[in-house]
Image (tube, rainbow, N blue to C red; front, side, top):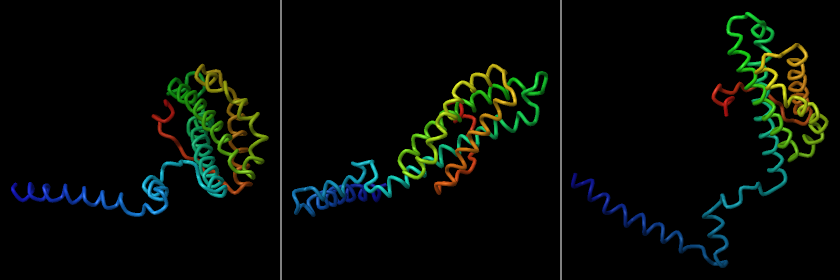
Length: 186
């Protein structure tokens, strides 16, 4: 125990001295470089347009991938398996999950479309799809009510495939990422 106390007593002044020495160094240009290097997160925006475009593509891919994964996992796959039909085992749970997935996918697709605006090529590729994305707005509610048809599932699948193709044509390939159930609920 005495060794631990001694180390603590020595370490505290040493850390303070190190911090004071570091803060006092490099103040030749009026403090600008010291404050910029001490707080690199002061400017969360990317510095160059190339970096901004890369982040836009990365965010687009992440959001579109989550939308695609949710759509396939909880809407397309259960529909093809017949889980949404009246009397099917687990229908109620599947329909509720599809409703949540529909709302989640719509939200992520809107975010992906917004992200695409940060990259000129991606923006041009995604711009024609915004009407299709907007058409999905109320389908989550329709799924939750159990009023789902082939056309509704096809609409989701078609928009997702169009967004994936737009991303691929702009050099931002989208891969399905299945979100967790907790992510669906918010």
